[in-house]
Image (tube, rainbow, N blue to C red; front, side, top):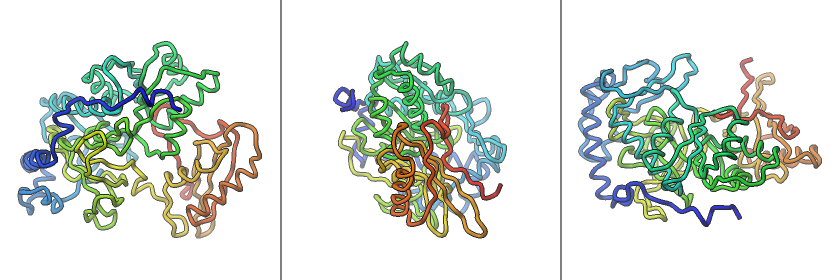
Amino acid sequence: MIRGVSEVSTGFHQPDIELMPREQLETIQLQRLQTTVRRLRENVPLMTERLSEVGDPSQLDDLAEMPFLYKSDLRDTYPFGLFAAGRRELARIHASSGTSGKPTVVGYTTDDIAVWNDCVARCLRGAGVEPGWWLHNAYGYGLFTGGLGLHGGAESAGIGVIPVSGGNTERQLTLIQDFQPEAICCTPSYALTLADRLHSLGVESNSLRVGILGAEPWTEEMRQSIEQRLNIIAVNIYGLSEVIGPGVSCETADRDGLVIMEDHFLPEVVDPETGERLPDGEIGVLVLTSLTKQAFPVLRYWTGDLCSITREPAPCGRTHARMSGIVGRADDMLVIRGVNVYPSQVEHTLLSVEGVSPHFQLVVRREGTLDTLSIRCEQEGSAGDATALADAVTVAMQSSLGIGVSVTVEAPGALPRSEGGKLSRVADERNL
């Protein structure tokens, strides 16, 4: 029994909005969509051009006729080409790192930050974090949206914040033990790092009840491992800086899908090849339109994240659409000898094998004209037959993926650990 499950229940920050009837919600969405389209037409030259052949939306379905916005558009207009507000209207800017050397830059007015705080506050209260609790915030502060995003939302919900930021794991552990926070936010991989270090120190209990974890895909098996090791409820939070940051959606304490803040973000799921809308329940690329952003509104932003959505009311009564956890990224898919492989699929299979820890790495190499996939994983504990465990993982992977893989089982602690940021699970050595 995980301590705290019976003690934690979903709460509300803005119940009149979170429980709003869908008909009323969709009326608000259409009004805000029309305002957003006008703002883009009038203030963003790129969107003025792209929307020149499209009329103003008269119904929500008209959104499907409008163009997508891609991350490459942000890089091409670096740094401020997609801003719909002038410099003197901005209260803050954030940026995410870019592989091309240029980050993607986003901005916020004072009203944008207020909206962001409300969204995160809803997430935290829905996850079961109570006013008066303390939140150990291990997301990075600075240009990354995680730290300040969670910080402002927590304060809006009446939750105290310990602004630790990322990294320096030993200090994190000391503060958790000394300050006794009831909640923590960080990446799932870093939660495992903290759990491992606590175990190695012989710490068998802690004050934590709820973990709000996100910024990278994770599976149900990984959730169970985190919950058992830290003795908490672990909920999934989702967001991206291009849309607002953390707080676009989050699971509630019942953990039945991530509730999307639909009065601020209009979701679609589309086919990754054709861009056509998919029915609720089918997995495709999540596309998001901001409805209230002033400084940096986005229209049909192609997130690249793969998930499904449902518009059925949640068990807690929330009426906003819910998305599944991210099952992978359209651009993270590996094609190995004609077979599509996602890191999350490997994680799911790996954790079904008894004796294997949640830590792993995929290594892709090219031998002649063929790509090969190797899996490095760790034994759970030092006892046991590593050869037999490797054989069991190999059989499980063959059954799950449909291709042969090479499996190496290593000693506990051999593989890379998250030190606060996102952890890369794939080492692609084909171009070395």
